[in-house]
Image 1 (spheres, one colour):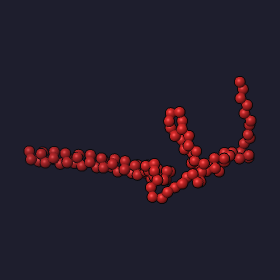
Image 2 (image 1 turned 180 degrees about the horizontal axis):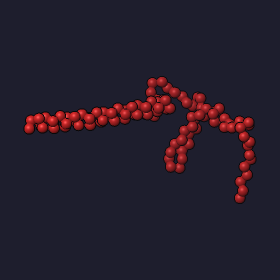
Image 3 (image 1 turned 120 degrees about the horizontal axis):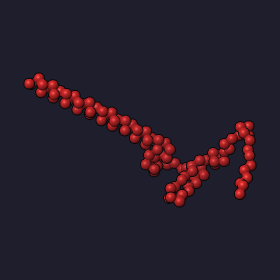
Image 4 (image 1 turned 30 degrees about the vertical axis):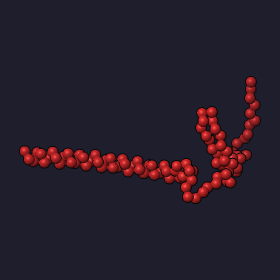
Amino acid sequence: MAILLYTLLFLIIYIIGIVAWNFFRIYRRLRKATKQFRDFGTQQNGSAYGYQTGQEHDYRSSSANSRTTTQTGDVIEDRRTEDKINRKIFTQEEGEYVDFEEVK
């Protein structure tokens, strides 16, 4: 009888260990994904939280920085430089340009 109880106790502890290990693995994955997300935000905006920390960045000096508000209230910022805004997508050798006329 004692061997049966020790076996059940061992199985319960083993199952708890496996469950705890899986929770730890999920926690590590979520933490890694969160860190990657914050690092990406820092790379894109200068900060993961939408404000600049430490080193100040002035995007207005190097870009047009146009800000548009849509009808739904969303704000769209364009931080591209003037060169990127005015850049042609296709070169003359890649295709032909066609004048478009709207038919009513």
